[in-house]
Image (cartoon, rainbow, N blue to C red; front, side, top):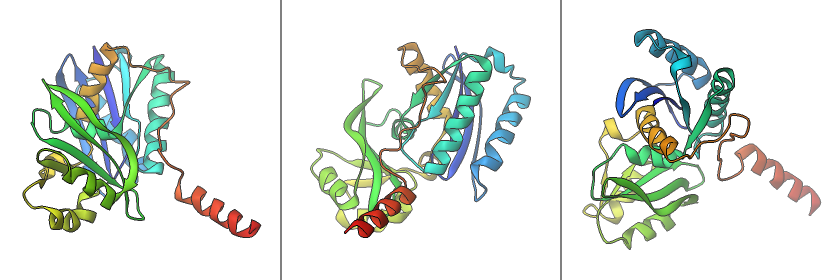
Length: 237
């Protein structure tokens, strides 16, 4: 089985190809350019470097959310376009599960955090049990202080990772320098290699959708939608 994966759910843009548990290629950029500028050229470069015939790909895996609204839309549209053109199904890998898979093998709790502004993060809590990623707390958008309250009650160390770490690191450390630790830089951000690896596992479990039915999972409304609702509410009061 060969899986082509895309992750543009955050600040990082990443493309990877995995075949039967082997990572054939991964191209990851963490820079200021928009994903609409980088994603397709990265995909083309990977294709050329490993002489990839896109028709040989079995599934398209995509980081399906939550995350940046714009990034998710770009990744979703790219995955959908490829899947439609190639007549392939899509594997929707929750962004936070893909992030957590970066830390495969740890015996600690894993808490990815993606900054959602207004003191909120997209988050969940995960753990590896006999090598399998398991959900301790389902992904959700929640207040950072509520998350830290929850994590303090866990019976072990918690590893934080994701683009929310630089934003909230001081607050996390202030709670506990012993219980709360941080993933290293090379494991702290989105990786299409992890999405592809999980995508291969999920595809073998039958967790796939058609290109026509795929939609990203935002978890909450965009800031523009919330502001519009607030204006309408003010206008009606």
